[in-house]
Length: 148
Image (cartoon, rainbow, N blue to C red; front, side):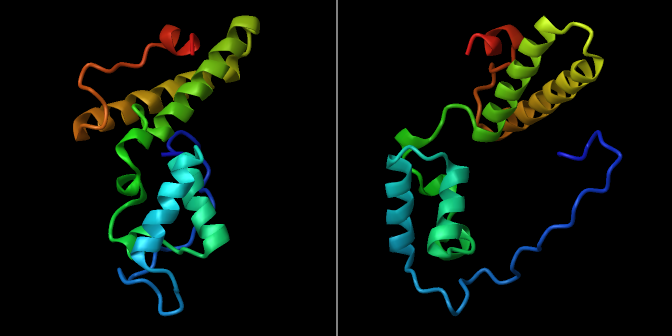
């Protein structure tokens, strides 16, 4: 989704492991991973940061390989966010761009950036509504977002 509106090819990335089993060198048990995820979520870390901490500090290659569930499903219900993290980041980005446009009305590149960000928000929101992660009546409203 990041390269949707740019003419660039982007950078190559690593491929996911083929096997669904944890690697032979991995030393943690699934219960230990569950406990680590709970501990890190109680510290107030969002899911993306929890995954980075598990990768960097504990050498967890992929949580879903070890635990058998995605990281978001391991979080307790009270730690789950009402709005998904990636959508929240895009809304904050759009709010910042809109605030900048209020001061700098002639900043046309930023105007286009805001349109592209809002397009991403609408597409992502429709996906989350379709899978049931957001309520069916949820809509992105730029004015409401700027009040956050």
